[in-house]
Length: 86
Image (tube, rainbow, N blue to C red; front, side, top):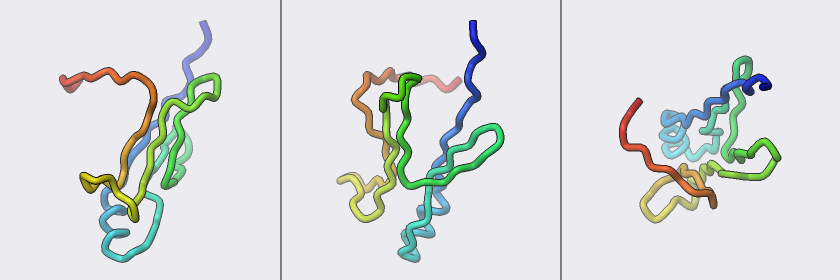
């Protein structure tokens, strides 16, 4: 068995979303954290080990969803719902 890849954590910064809404700026609100880097973006594509897109995280302050969401995740894959917090 090979080693597991290092964990990536994707964080949405609500403070930047609020500041962007207030000031009209478009600073990146998504932070991708690895064991040694923090990368910032307004759109993140999540790929499987073959390089195929499995999901996209989108920040769209100028065209939010009808519910008002400015950040959301889109995928064509099946989704498993887990209601308990681990």
